[in-house]
Structures are given as structure tokens and as C-alpha cells.
Length: 495
Image (cartoon, rainbow, N blue to C red; front, side, top):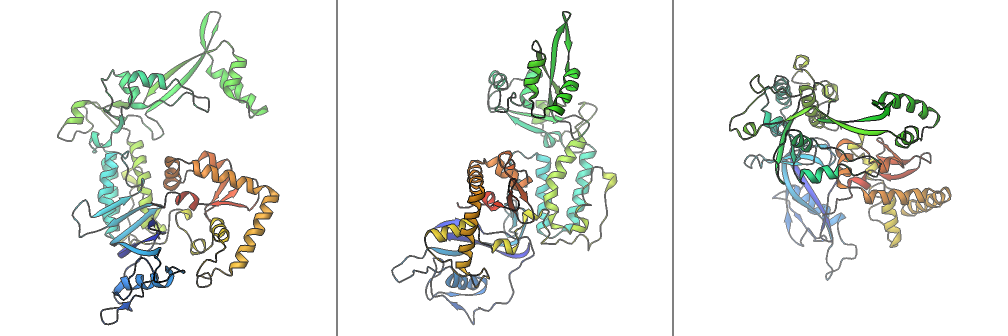
């Protein structure tokens, strides 16, 4: 969104609730119904307005909205108003990259406070420094409406990554030592709920391999030295052996071939159980393959930028680091028209594209994913939990007709009829399980769903996500809605 923006905050009983954010180009009007010559005189029917106070400009619009729609319906001179729509701040520009990931621009403030970043997509302690430095420049360009400059800056940065012109300290991954090496080695031998050993961590494995002296709180800097973007920092390979004629013999190939045939006849057969049954005398040896190396302390502490060179013999994995960079840039491209959005990113500077000034104009209302943006119909359709609340307390929601939502009795009757039908089918049990899963989701699972669209495994076993309606649909019952995307995105809304 570009131009002067109003950011609102809704409060009920003194608690703040986030309002929906919209993709789009919005600006405060230059002319208002209420001005110095014709101010709005408030009657003070909400917690945000005072009787007799004069309001002008957009503040008058908000005050009138509060007095009209946020008033306490049981209001009298002795009552306390509980609802109100307040103004948090006035922005020069704001961009929503995805749900709960946005940037705001305050040019009157000094750098770096002129830009506020919210969301793990664009701000994270785990983000590599080379990406963070680009975002510092690129997001400001987008907030200023400089689309062509952003694209040019992006191509220049791809060329720097490709030609090893990024300082090693900036491109390095960082791993924090939170336990001793002895504790780590004991920890990785533990078996997870899935029946597998815990994952290895590259910085600990590097400390072991290179005999690094590390203490709790230390940070290990390391770079990926593979050749393709799919190569992870480390890879654990499990070798299966038996003794055949007193000779130690690896049987990995035999296991893969035979188990493949077993799966055809018995798809649910667990591989580990089958190996124990088929090769009862087998034993295992694990090997760690390294596609990474630690950075020397002199490189980390150097006051000057140090790059890949023949002298230090270091070459980072350009394919992997460009891929990591592009994944972080993808959400930012929501500002560009879909006609060019999918053509911007490249893996090789020789493939760069050229766009006209008109093509580089920033746009709005074209989210990367349908699920990133709610439709008006979705916002104005009452959810089951809302109907349940109003019905529980025998109250009628206000402004139904003004919002075009229909008759309350009809809405309520349709809801209870649906509940009865779902109970007969057994859908009510599925919804109960769904709500239990939602409450158990971790912050990490919520972030991955919001930022990357990755459905939590516990949820994916029960429902599928419909990006058109933003609803979770039952896997067992056709066309039955189990829940909504807001069940996850708004779980931590109230602050």
C-alpha cells in the first residue's frame, strides 16, 4: 500500500485485537466531510470518543464510526464504554508481503527506525546476514515505490553471490553451542517418536571433526561447500552390515532391492521391523558426509571483508545460496504485476531480464497465494464460533442488515440444522479433534503455515486446505468445512 496510511487498532474490554490487513493502494483523502469549518462533534458513545469533542479529517471519520458502530448498546450515563476503534499510527507507506508479514515506512524518522519490519519472512534472528543486508535496501526501495531500482539491485546482488563477492562472514550460517559436545553425542543417540535417531546438527559435527574448542554460548560460523542447491550441510548415511563367511559385508543394496518388493505386497510394513526379521544378525555403522566447513577465527574477527580466494581455498556453494536468497525474495515480489512477477527471479546473472518502466510500476490486490488475502465475502460471513457465541448468550449481533449478512433467525436456524446433520454423520467428533489439534500447534508450526504454507502434519492427516475459500475441508466427508484459516492465523491475535 502506498500513500499516507491509517493503521487502526480495535479494543474490546481494554484488550487489543488486530484488524485484517489488506493488499492494495490506499491513501488518506485530501478533502474530508469534516474539516476546521465543519468539524464532527462527538456524542461520546465509545471508549475512544468523548462527548462534545471536535474532530476533523480522518480522525473525524474514525470518531463517527465509533459513535455509530462501536457504541455500548447498554450505554447510560453511569456505564463504561467497552469498545472502540483507535488509531495506532499514520504511515507513509505499508506493504503486506503475506499474512502477518509486513513493512511500514516512516520517512520522518532516522535510519533504521524509518522502516518497521514484522514477520519471520522478512525479519529473523536466524536469517543469514547477506540476505538481511539486501532486505534492508530492497524493502526501503519498495516502500518508496522504486520498483525498477529494486529489480536492478536484485540482479546486481545475484551477480555478487554468483561471483563470490559476498563476504564470507555475511554468507556463513551460524550455529550456537547450547550444550557440551558430550551432551550432544548422548542426545543424538536418543530415538524420536517416529522411531528414528535425532537429527545431527552441522555446527556440532564440525566442532567434533575439526576438534574445535567450543563452550556454551559460542557461535560456530560455517559455509556450505557443495555444488548443487539440494546438498545439505551434512548428510547421515546408515550402512547395514552382516558377517558372511566371517567377512564384514555391506548389504545396503540388497536391503533396498528386497524391501522395494515387500512394499508392493505390504505397503504398511515398517522398514526397520522388516530388516530385523530378515537380517537378525545385522549391525549398523553411521557415516557423516560433510558439504560444509567452518570459518577460521581470523576470518570471523577481521575488520576487513574477506572473500573466497585461492589463498584461503574457500568456495561457497553458489547454487544453494542463490536458491536461499530467492526464497526470501519471492514474497517481496507481491508488489509487482503478475505479468512480470514470475519472470524476475534468476539463478544465473547471464539470465537476467529487462523490464520497461511501466512494467516495473508497483501494484496491489494481486497476492502470491489466494490464501494470503481474504475476500470481502469471507470477512462478512459469520463463522460457526461467532454464531455459537451470540446464541449462547441469547443475543442478536448488531448491524447484520447494514452489512448485508441477512436475518439473524435464519442464520441461527441454518447453523443448528447443520449441527444436527453433522452429528448424525459424525462430523462433530472430527471438529472436536480438529480444535484439539489447533490448540496444540507450536509457534514454529504456526509460523511455517503462515510464512511458507506448510500444513502441520497433525492437521494434514485430518483435513485439506482449500486456497479459494481459505477453509479446512474434511478428508472423510465431501464438501464439509471443518475449520477456517483464521483458526490458526488469529490464534495469537489478542495481545
